[in-house]
Length: 610
Image (tube, rainbow, N blue to C red; front, side, top):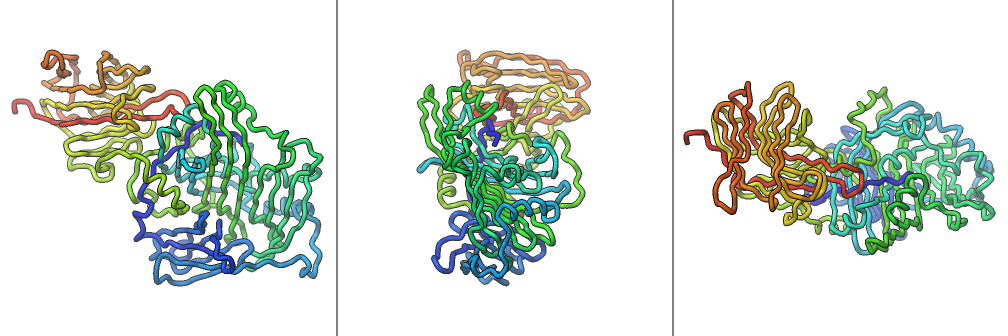
């Protein structure tokens, strides 16, 4: 696996806020009363949707009023179907179902022959042309007692059977959210080991036959047919495997589930073998080089992948995939010596097998910019009609304890007369008389580039004043100190080319705080920068015809001081006036992400002469 050099972080709270729109359920083993993990939950009604049960056997489905019935299926259990729901949550018990090999009247072929035939049948059992999957992704990093990060996102993935490694899985981010702690930011600020959504989507048998199922590698493994079980009334061969003791490599062990009639592989579980552990390559290629440069010792203690399918018509579609890694992370120069568990999971929400329209180049998501392209704030209806994997209670408690901005979110409900340019780039809050703008993705105001901007229309001559406070979003007492992260008052007029005047404060390439005047004429920006002692500045901008005066309040003289005077030609009478954010943090290290909060306190607009 190619490790991801990004910090997959998302903030999320209020998991139960949509309880009135969800059907909650729990699946138990009828004999042991233990939770059943990873069941296939398929809902039928106005549309077909699916989900899976978590480690506690819990699941949820959106819009229960549109559901006529649900089907619960799991390998080794009898399928359960229920129509109608009188209450939520519901508890479902599944009866185990296992058939012994001795009961078979026809002797099965050898394990390797079954696998060989299953691989040959991939083209008829799965989609064999480009297709698209909408998937929900979650990643957690924790040790025994502490969550370092939690991440969630919905992706659209276009998969191409037979393509090269780089082309077999193209992804587009739909939406996401992150949560972080101070400790986690410090620990992974140089290096982040991630399963990654692209890794999980790329494990589908349609596009990737694992090496232990390739005939050329059979000589390195021992395969056995352990038993016969069932799935939705179909017989399923259970094949166990492990690397041979004589092989001087660290390979795989696990279980392959093959449906007896169609020879479809309906589930895979595989992990690094305990044999040959002395030959284990913990890191390879660029990952190994980077870890050496950063002085990081990175040992993979355990690694396990799970993949499952459900049948739709005459084809098997991916249902879920997950990855679990136990890792020992040592970085002496930062006094870090930690053992932690990373868990990444992908739930396939829907699959489109029709002809695809390829993603535009600008839409493509890349693993090394995840931290820059995932929103960090959201509302209670964040996932809309999409199902998501029900979080375990420990995750809920961990996220609830993580700090978020205090204020009323205004992105979806802006004040009268106000508009937000690029709402996908930032969140707007209001707390008493203070407007707050938090960029959560890369967003620049330079030359022709445009970032987030909360604005209203002003006409004629006027004066605007606000007390600007620009801090880290993660620490409202500290100044932003990485990259180019600024915020302030902007005057802008809408035209084919970008034209604006921007009076802002923040950091510009180094930690020193500055006040910035940016004058952009037809897509070309001129910038004037002056150092200031702190991340707070009272700013005033006035317009008289085509002349704009920028002033700041000098705390020593207790007087307004002229900062810049700008004369612009061909200025329209009506302008856009408001607060804008600029967040550009070069590089792909995990700490190279927007961390800026722009506050405009006592934002006041006064028409001239009043």
